Image 1 (cartoon, rainbow, N blue to C red):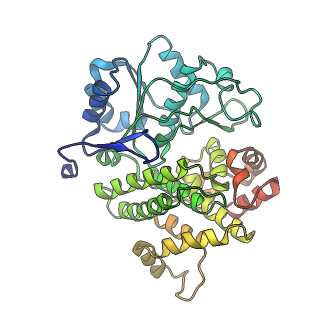
Image 2 (spheres, rainbow, N blue to C red):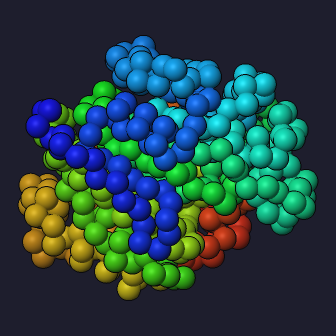
Image 3 (spheres, rainbow, N blue to C red):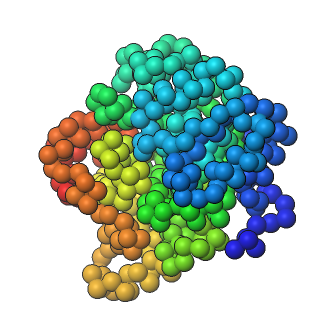
Length: 415
């Protein structure tokens, strides 16, 4: 497995259109992280936010701490799924007097979002839950948002262990657990500076999290390609989708296949490049944002919602041409052709739709396909639908969703 690593690091912009984030791969992450901190960022007071499961179950947190030893000002272990705002406040209290000049994350999406929000809060002197509530969203959805917000100034290095992709964009999501249980979107307008990819590290990620977060990246690609307001991200979304489907299926066959893991990581870069082009996403993302606070894993939200949203939009004749284009792309892939030929549900002369093929892929990955399977009962549907209607992406779904009944139609399909 060590043969996957190279003699020299590859480091380049993740996206052709902008300088950040840089993405690095080819060398083990501890040495790469230290080198960039010292040589590029000239930092000496580093704060590390690391995964609790990695800390408990692997040597990797200690390896990174050892590599950064003289540079570390503090370490925080663990952030709960969907980044509770209260836990961000806890971290802010720890760093308030440390005068940190760099943040490093080691872990999955909630860790990344937490760090992005920490440095945004530091730039805006926000230390409490009430003060953090003045930083999220736009005026139309958050009347308490401040008139003036300052950009983060502290460099952020992300070492991801999942495929959720948040490390490639500025936006962060965090959840108000004390009030509405709604997930809020913060827009710091500064990307992380560096993402370090290490597929060996990712073999420690539970298979369920790895695969489901990969479906989240597939969701980015599909909703980009199925949008009616597409920008310049289509080609990246297409190539990212192909890499993700191929790589994820390979990972189910051999979880130690480092090449397959890196194919997935590269697919995420292309998925996030597509997203960064500004194409509005749709109802799958909106539903996913609000399922999170109910305890549904970040990637599992897409496993449940994406096929149903595609079917909903198709029933409304909203984006038939766009869905057909994605369907054609998927059914040309050998891995998908193999799945179709081995599933008795499909016959050679059957007219396929995108929702069915996505369902087949997600089932092949062993991921949940209903709200009941992820612990959300129908008693939660009414409140959930209201929160979804307030989400940023529900308004840009291919079929404009403006009524609670329309949201409930989708939820009922996957109950």
